[in-house]
Length: 506
Image (cartoon, rainbow, N blue to C red; front, side, top):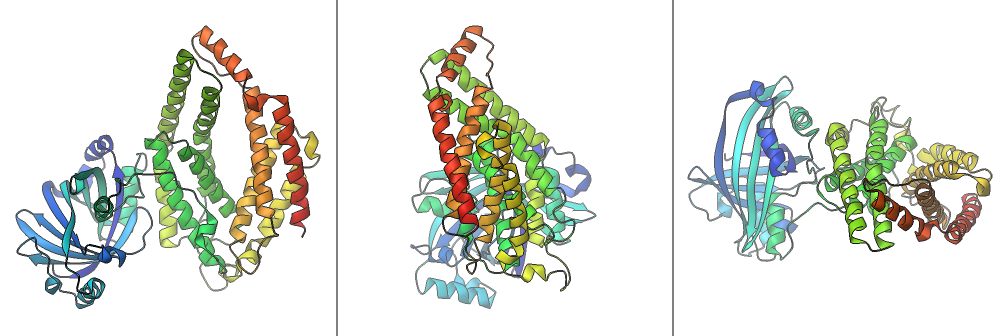
């Protein structure tokens, strides 16, 4: 205590069942130094009434463990999901009352004083934790593993949680990454895990407990990006976060946006890797595009079931049939979750996060990084031209394309759109006016046709013959299958296809 240091730790949220499995993980015993220890921790977080310390990225915590108090100041830093780096200073205390004079590091003490500007400190929230820790050592280095079960509270509002923390002791961040992969790679873990302080401050401000929610990966949210290396780095980070959060939503929620946004983010990642082929360090993306493709295929049946079940439930009312449809939907969801665990989906995200955190995709050497220093639109130009040529080739005779050909064209258009959205971040070379909107309209119209084609050629099965016949009748009544509706969507797609050619060459 009494010293300032950078705390590097991997943090993830899990459920109680997962936490119990981790306690018994077979990799722990041979790597444990000494014995595991269990203790209770009480932490009280202080701030001004308007939470000005939090807004300045500063956190002041009083913690009691084993009858002793200590005061910790943390300076938050922007972090990827999973691995977090925080500058902190911890000093001994003789009571739960905070004191700026106690802060032993002058710079952090000055930052606190400046942020408070004379405002009085007051308790905002508290956490009560039951923590089991182990010191683990492997050839990669030494870490402290903490398995926490507890709750954060503000007033009468309580937010319970289970959490895994892997703090780096020796060997830099590598042992934390390795242990995260070993322990969590095949588990449903929330890598976008809010800190205990963030949880408590949200409750104190009258908010709801922080829960995972579907995340829309949106390149435009990154702002203008002229430099290719900066843009690619920002996009990798955004996609890593989006994939991590949406995967956990799929594992733990019935929100249909979770599977949808997970597939979108996985496709964007594949498009990014394709657009930057030759720009990245050799071997950096090996297996990444294939892994993203495979996860997308695993999630596809759940996304299809979400769409189809919603359509069928809206098309009629029969309590027995509706219950059977919902049960089938739940069975599909359970099967997809099992398949994601078996495929190591969380491990895929951990690998992606490590690639981003360590900059493992960046070319080494000045000469090799030359293309990464180009303006963004210029660097992506060859990939865009190649993808456009592919779209034109697969779209020949557009009006006469059969269902498989339209589906293939739609996938090509998605890649083109995602590449173009990335290139559009370059403020000096904007895409032709209306091009992205035209691409979106064409993709949507083809999507409706694709859904209709899938429904028309797919009879869902139920064990009860009477229910199966009732479902077939309801399926046949779906508006999307009507000839007039299909003709309308095809006409819409043709108009967008023609406009796409006009706008591309402007």
